[in-house]
Length: 238
Image (cartoon, helix red, strand yellow):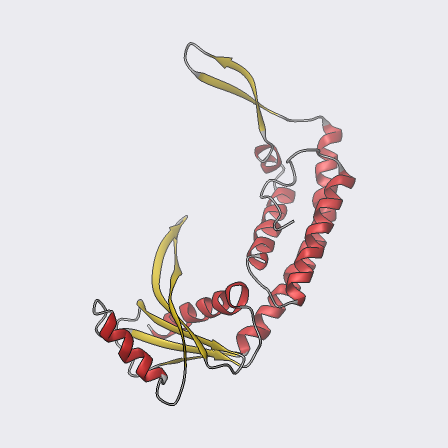
């Protein structure tokens, strides 16, 4: 089980023991990933599922809205499908509540574990500019190195702004440019100059180095945590 479906609570058989089995299998897998310091996408998934279960418990109407739908009749003349919600009796709703109440402590515990691991990892990642930082920093390069190796992963980053409800949020998109190795000749500054010469669309790019002594998987941990740290750094520098 790579992930827990968004509608796992109402998907398929709605049975307390079956849903407990699904949840506990998922939690076990999440713990194994956390033990290997693989944070994502598991940490963000836990946040989603915990918030969703909390809303369901606080507002029972959302339980009805989360039920899947089946076709009740088809109007072939108008090509419209009429749906009816699969809403059970009081016993079924009691089963849903039991599953929610059982699941929340397990998900919260795993979420706390993941959050603590995130903080520990974030404290071990050091972010610093390479060369003189320009005024425009919403787009540039991120040099990623770790575990005392000479290997450097070079990413192009771009800060994006999106609206959710009435608030604005900042996100970051990264694209791998290449992987190289640092040496006495190929320094971080030399890497930046080489990027400027090769990619002239950014003549004076903001360039940041993120390095750590921790042994971390790149895609599941080091890159996503560093991206969040870079967004925070740029917000504070603005």
